[in-house]
Image (tube, rainbow, N blue to C red; front, side, top):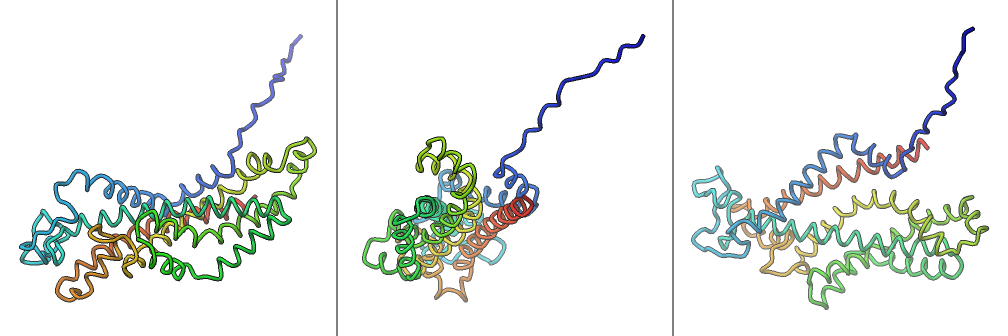
Length: 303
C-alpha cells in the first residue's frame, strides 16, 4: 500500500515593494538617471572637497597672472590654473567650484524649504477643508499673482543679499505651486476608505494626516521636486547677474558672468567657465528629475 504525502505548507507570500521603492527602482533602471546621478555626485564632491584641499583661494588676486588662458588654449597658461585666470589674476577653476557650491546649497535648501511649507499648507487645506481651505487658497492666489523674480528683486533690493535671505526669498516665492498640488492630492486622499475607517475607529484628523495620508501623498511630489532644484539655481544666477545675489568677494555664477561681459572677446573663458559648470549641473539634475517623473508616471499609470 502506497502512502501519498501531501505538502500542506502554504507558500510564503511575496513581499510587495512600496510605491516609492518601485518608483526609485524604475528610475534607476533608466540610463539617464544613472548618468545624471554620477555627474551630480562628481560636481558635488568636487565643489565640497577640492577648495578645502587646494592651496589656491578663489579671492586671491595675482595681477601678474591676469588673463591667463586655460590649459593648451594659449601661449600663456599654467597647470596651476587649468581653467585660466580672470582680469584680476584669480583662479577660474576655484571660483567656479565655489560658485557651484553656493548655487547647489541655495537650490537644494530652497526646494526643501518650499516643499515643507507648500506641501504642509496644501495638505492642511485639502484635508481639513472649510475655512482652512478658503484662507490658505486665497493666500496662494495672491502669492501667485506676483512673479517670483519681481518679488525677489523687490525684497533683496531693500535688504542685504546674504545666503539665508536669498533662500528665504526664493522659498516664499515658490511655495504656492506645491500647496496647490498637495491640496489636490489631499482632497482625493481624504475620500478613500481607509480614512473613513480610521475615523470610525476614533482617529483624529491630525493623526490621520500626519501618520497615514502624508506618507502616501508627499513622496511622489518630492520626486518631481528634484527638477525645481535646477530652477532655483537659475534664479540664483539671475539674481547674482543683477547684483542682488551673493555679494563680492565671494564668487557666484551670476556675478562672475556679469563682471566678465567686457572681456568676452579677449578673455572668453571668464564667462564661459561658470556657464559650462552651470549647464552641466543643470543637465545632471534635469536627467535625474526627468527619469523620476517618467518612473512616477509609469508606476501610477500602470497601477
